[in-house]
Length: 384
Image (tube, rainbow, N blue to C red; front, side, top):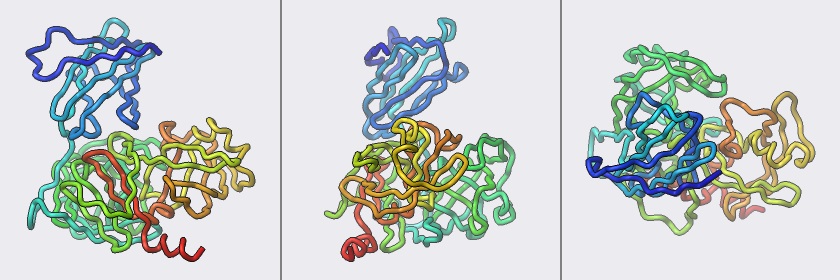
């Protein structure tokens, strides 16, 4: 790949005399921003075709990759820069990299708008549940799932939120595969004193009978999210809180600009293999290793004894580390064929059987993930 590092024209647009060009034969591009990578589809009908940076309060470098060329755009917080994507020498698309916020901000409906918002939660089957409402409904049991791109509603529980207008459809990719499902773009979701309006939501059939809805990190892109398993509360901070001495900072990447990824080390044949894993509070197990990592590191032949049939195998994960913390042995899943909901962008999924051993501070504003062992995890270490 030929690397072409260009600093494109900045705001304001009237000062522009010539835009730099990235040439491609395909509308499918790859984007890298910090630790994150994304698939990008060039849209000629949307000009400027805009990519919003993961962390607009930070800015930085964003690189677009075509078959042979690449182009790097540098943006400062609050500015945008434009360039041209020329597809097959016949389609010119003005493409913009913007370091301005494009995500929803909550309205605080009661109390101090600058205060930390506290939302109690309960645990069931290693998952986090809070009470909330949608479009003025009664209380709904809502799962906080960091592995979810957006809002989902249990299609078997529609009577609990009768005011949702299911006037559209969307394509949903999850454990049920890729399906066209009913959707709405006119919902208001409320959690505690926080309220978001004009949100999109889709119906899904892969939820538990006791779950009404699912929400994820998409609501908190301008916030700092703290998951305190010891006290079973979520704290939603408008700015970065003081960090306790027990917390350790880890690099953060975002899948689709929303779902957090963290690095982990899988011990195989005495070798620690470092990969990015989805930080998935909605996955009740400990670990799922993707088919892509299986292929890249020949894990099927190296992991030793395993159980199962079909596309998945069960094995005993030993010596898995997040930073300097070694997690207790646990049964894990190895994917043998590429699944539609796993993709090839990361090494697998870390689930809440392991993640609940850490109190978490997820800094969506500056891009970092802070972890500290819970009292339960400290007690287990002391008993060893």
